[in-house]
Image (cartoon, rainbow, N blue to C red; front, side, top):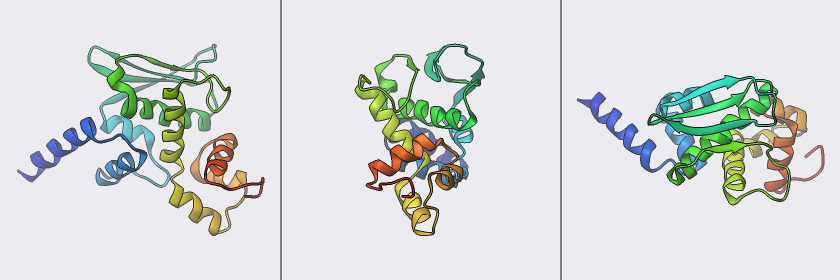
Length: 176
């Protein structure tokens, strides 16, 4: 009986309350998904989202769409692995924040350009908080991991993603 309750609670929670990076991290932790660094593929799988890595010659990094009542995230396998990781987090953000819009999301470029939609800005913010939680980021810097490269290695994201996150948290300079 306890197993049935747990499964029902997980299904309800993933459908209704996973609308912040913290709630998604809590969900991962409660479901024994590695969180340091976050295992995004296991997280997507637990949410019943299929991931497809495909070679795309265009500038599309990733997509989230619904097909036959199933959510699918496509990731451009030609992008650097750290870019793919952030793209997956970004698409999970669209799933958590925007799936009610019943549309497909095609993501071309992250963290660049001034003409991003509010949904893209929200997904970038959510994704950066998901893969680089503020507490862990600040702890890492306090423990001496204060270079972009060290933080990039720790969180397995691009140096650009680290720079943007550091700036949003009030850090400055290349040495943070």
